Length: 621
Image (cartoon, rainbow, N blue to C red; front, side, top):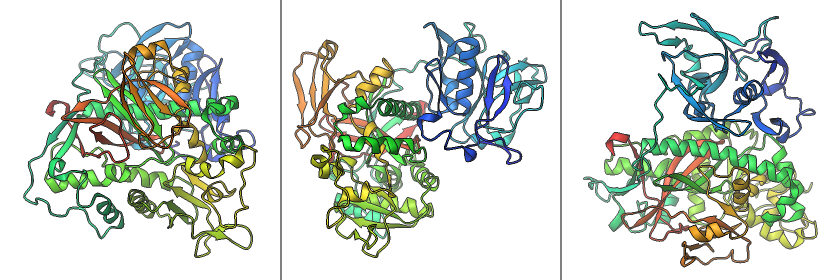
């Protein structure tokens, strides 16, 4: 991010040197030299083998400065503003030390070496910002920062800029924040002294309570409330056989799930943080190819996976986390970032349901999802017609049509392809649709594994078998050089359940993760566990065992031949005769919205209901 386009220094230029001899770099990504930084891994900044961040963003400098000057390391965060909520920081000798947050206007002034934190908004929309305070005066402070002004400092200056300050009548120290920058939340200091600090709020069990409520039937009764003139809504009504979100409208039409604002905030933070952790784990696997063997992916595909990951522009549009909410917090089951579904239910249908039944209390947690998808597509780099590829199934149809609306709103032309029967080879060997339009960009509802099934036998011989079929197959379309696919090929890795043991090994005891292993451990036997195929869908071939190793629930399916992993048992909350799973969407790597899946079984399946979800003020629940 930069506030000016005048005299910007190329990416990686040293803008100046901060106190302690720490260089501060330009982060003008438009000037990246791809010969120097050819792939995604090259953008990782590490010191002594410790990950600092992504070159040369604001969080990277904050972490590198603290590590170099103080030996301190704060935990990974999804967004810079989340640093303000951290309560501990780790010394490189292993000690865990308290970290205190002080609001802008606190009677404890910032001090050299503390971190200054901006919230979301203005030029720091969605991410916030962090800088390191280098000096404090009565009328100003000086800071060093990256990813804001990519302009070299004046000779002899050892800071990025100064921020005006003023002391209030009560002794509060206030920093001026220009409106374009949003809001300065305050500063965080490693200190044992908590005087004037923000109180550390320990979430109560009520924070994580999930309830099912009923709304009083409205005067509109059972009248239609989805606009069937819109193709996506018509397809949804066709699948549901009516204007409803549930399988049994006569029982559940007026039921909804309610959660607190605090729980939604925690889900938001978990989504942002976990996306980053899954990306770390993906990079680790692809930098250590021997570990790919555990993912049961054809070896002929390995170089293409690495190539897909190395293309730093080959980003995800969206994925879905599945969470279990417990009285102690939330735990992630998995990350569906290959071919996630339920976007339309979250981003459109549950909001229209609330309008229809007259539910005005609370907020719709999917209200920003569509806008997020539009923004992600606008930043996707698509510069031609995008083909939306889906199967002839009502659920895939409305999901695809909903995405077409986002594409249209983003200004991207799209064409729909139901299956691949209408595509063919052109005279020059390209793949074209029935109208002769070359297929260069694709968004698909199919999982990548569906394509791999077509070539798995051939792949064992290091031969993808591409381009030889008289009629192009799905795999010919998706793996053809020159075709960019969303979600990209590398999402095969984080979507595969084999990533879960990797995550647990890399981030042991992380609060959002469940212990997961390739083999059954004594600890899992004692606490209960779940077996999952590393590749699977719709809750197929899952078995749940309690702490006495008694089988609690088991599902059948077509993935029984797949390798299994073992994950600690975490039962979904059982509320009003339903097990409730909360699902969040990442859009462009950030939180986009929340929906629910509910079932009478503890294993959520493809036909489980999506009850509407509402978020209430903490005091109103």
